[in-house]
Length: 369
Picture 1 (tube, rainbow, N blue to C red):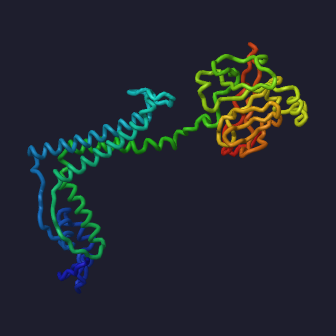
Picture 2 (picture 1 turned 180 degrees about the vertical axis):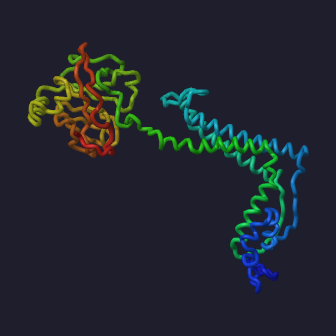
Picture 3 (picture 1 turned 180 degrees about the horizontal axis):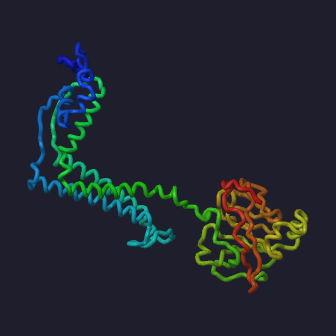
């Protein structure tokens, strides 16, 4: 509610106008900060009803309050810096963070530690501020009459804010100032750390578009044994993995190795000629296709050699091996990517390269080249 002030020269609407008319910027600039503070309060119609100045400077009560506030601010800063250490996974104090399937590793603690460090840090910031406000700041009860703002209010309000800073005692309470700076540095660093993902691209090396397959990597069974061309019967299928450490545990690496029957080879050549791309990417009568369905990523695990159809058990997509694993039924819209293979100097089947296109669901929006 706005209350009219009956004094001349105030915002009450008298003939003398408001404080902006009575006090020019030049006149206000000649006054001290304390004078501006008192002047602003008087023209704002402030009536102080009660003042509690807080603990006496240098007393045991003040020193104890300062230690308590400084303790919580320092603890907040330590936890904020702990968040940074955990986030970057530097390996200086803790093992490097890397995802594994085993719950006993540090990777299972990564997210909980991030939440605990930053969450507790902010809690201790709040506790420190509450203690500082209750135990160290002066308290006063006042009522105020409002009027329209102008340059008078701008200058007197600034003086009031600075005056509050002086009365807060921060300038002489060095422990609190140091703990505040420490806490601010830690929390500020913790808050900007996640922005590092905008600077350092987490997709360096195209991790979503590559697999453990590479030139010269052997095709091996689940038990790690390599495969020679004569190990399979015509018309058969077996699941193979890259012969590298952890290759049989990589979710994007399972591959179906087919040995074609003569009539299947003839059907492929009838459509694509003697140099059909499917056969060119294979070796002799062997071809290899990703086991990951291009619909929703289910493992394609059924093969009807009589019809040359590869079936996905999840949503019944079907892929024709004589047409380059092109989908011929079901919701899949993209062929299964083909892995180029050859034989190394020791007579074992190996990959010529990684898959030429991303494997998995068709949300990649990539066309077969």
